[in-house]
Amino acid sequence: MRLILREALQSFRRAPLLSVLSITTIAFSLFTIGLFGLVAINMREALRDVGARVEVVAYILRGTPLESITVAAQDISAFPEVLAVDYIDEEQALAQAQAELVEFRDAYRDLRVNPLPASFEIQLKEGFRGADDVAAVAERVGGFGFVEDVRFGREWIERLDQIRNIAGLVGLVIGIAFAAVAVVIIGTTIRMAVLQRAREIMVMRLVGATDWFIRGPFLLEGAIKGMLGGILSIGLAYGTFLAFSRNTTALSGLVFFDPIHLVAGVLFGIALGLGGSLVSVGRHLKDV
Image (cartoon, rainbow, N blue to C red):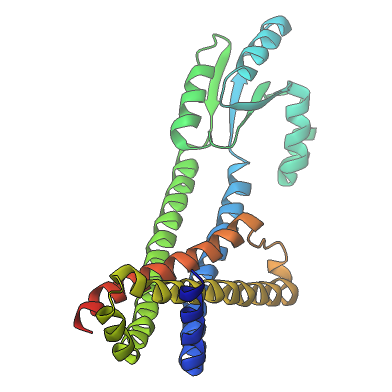
């Protein structure tokens, strides 16, 4: 193991400029992936905030006994999808309308009879805010005999689901594309190192060294380059994040990667380095 580590480190000494160039190139490839990751995370947070506003509103028939309403609220609260149930009586509904619909405030003030019904405002748990889950809850709530109507904005929720799906697909495709570019870059640098040490590898084969013993230093070299590139890309991503969040007031609510994402980013860089080295060495070692 010491020999493999020494050989891997010596490759950096033999070609320092090439090593720095390859690490930098890897870092910028991973940095690009990281930027799209940051966009995806912040888009997910924004969609989560929008999704938190998804609710089911069930309008209650006038004259429904309060006991029936209380029992129904407890039953609805027990639904696995439901986070909270708020009962809004007629007076509260009128007060909300006067506060939110300012242009109709005078009209509401002149009313002799309150035309607004009582209702249940049902908030859903995260993970149950898709169109199918919301529709299922609305259908069950509509089964109560005293529920006159149920509203939940089906079209708006379906569009929100479409945005989630499109954002996830685009992020996945772009991430795979840049990961492939990083693998090609790493493989190219490892191939150059293999060709540079052709005579040394031939001598090692003549004395009986196995292919895996020969591959070891190159694989470790690729892993180290991938790790350094991953760390550098995180630094670049954090600098970009600070620049945007500090200098742009509208983007002050941006979030950065959490520690798990950072560790995963470095491990991803190592995996790319190993993958690129393995492919390159396996393809070209036979010809050396």
